[in-house]
Image 1 (tube, rainbow, N blue to C red):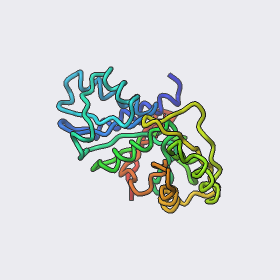
Image 2 (cartoon, rainbow, N blue to C red):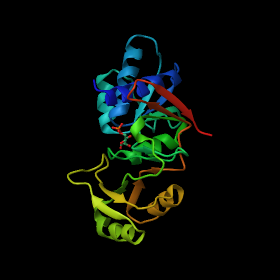
Image 3 (cartoon, protein in one colour):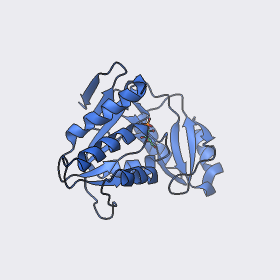
Image 4 (tube, protein in one colour):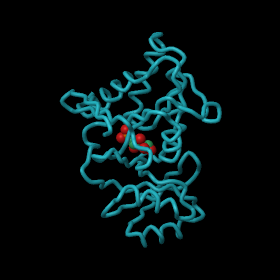
Length: 224
Ligand code: A5P
């Protein structure tokens, strides 16, 4: 395993410290979360964690979790989640996030919003002073052109994610902005008719960000 993968893995494994018996867990999506799922599966199998139930944020996470023997439920069955563990594409100093590199941000935001605690696991590359990642915007196919026009009017440069549909069957417009004022932009993009959700998380920010470093260190940062 290379240093970067190890950085993801140690951040993911550290997040297990916050998991307790009997918890309902939000299960995020992505390559960092995969390490969390593997560690969680091991703990459940080994009997160290009991009566834990996961609410997956994507079909992919659902499939991996099933393979690992993690008991699952739906948001309809449990609408209060104790702890959500998820990755991110970028994290700024105020713990605003950009998510959706894997196209799962709509469900991820629903799960994070339903969670009492939200912990984000990242490798050190994801910590940024200023966002540069294109904002993933999930859009109904029907409204593609109209949404693109409005994103351009807002100063964005939308680009269709090729050969990709979300779990809900929608398209993603990855939209580059020169300046991202997280709170304003999150709300404004969602006001466009035809937009389901965008990948800025400024209203549901994590309480903790666990960062794995390529030199093998891991740090838990708390939101002030
Ligand atoms: C999924 O849509 C995303 O929000 C992921 O949480 C994010 O892209 C982080 O993924 P990695 O851990 O694979 O970088």
